[in-house]
Length: 217
Image 1: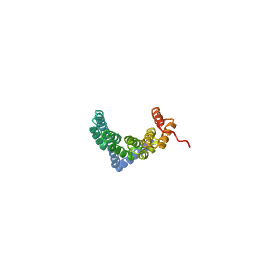
Image 2: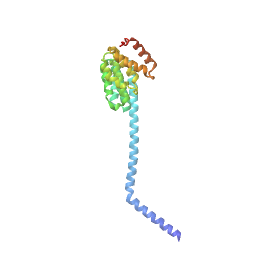
Image 3: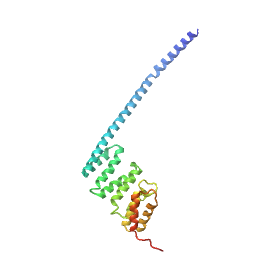
Image 4: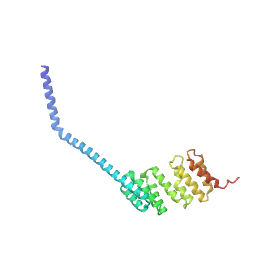
């Protein structure tokens, strides 16, 4: 008798499952199709992105070769084109290299390219700081101290990645523009920072030796 009841229960369950399948099978099949399509689409996207990255890497290497061969105009063009169409990872690098190539023909135009990168929040804080440093390096011999200060003072703060270079440029700019008070301020800041690189510290000490003595009150 118990076996009979088990068979009846099993038949009832099969009947219920069949009804559920008949009612919802179309939705289940549609869901499976969507899952397969989504996975296929994602795999396809990953493949295309990998292809783009590989192509951008090859183009970047060719542009670097042009630069190393002294073909700066051609290299600048190649980096500029790459910056316009490359994946994000290569785009900022290409913009920086294009500006570096432009520096050989027109430092002011190159500084403007660096300024554009520094103003682009989408590239990230450290890249912006690097662009500011590069632009200031091109202008430090000709710009006013006020201009260099406006460009670099934020990059000279204690936690800034490029603070050492920024401080040296600020000190040098102040010295070139006969602002000895500002020059001494930045040289003291360099001297007081225990993480100042030895080479930079030596250059700062040499520059400090050229400053006039502080007037006694």
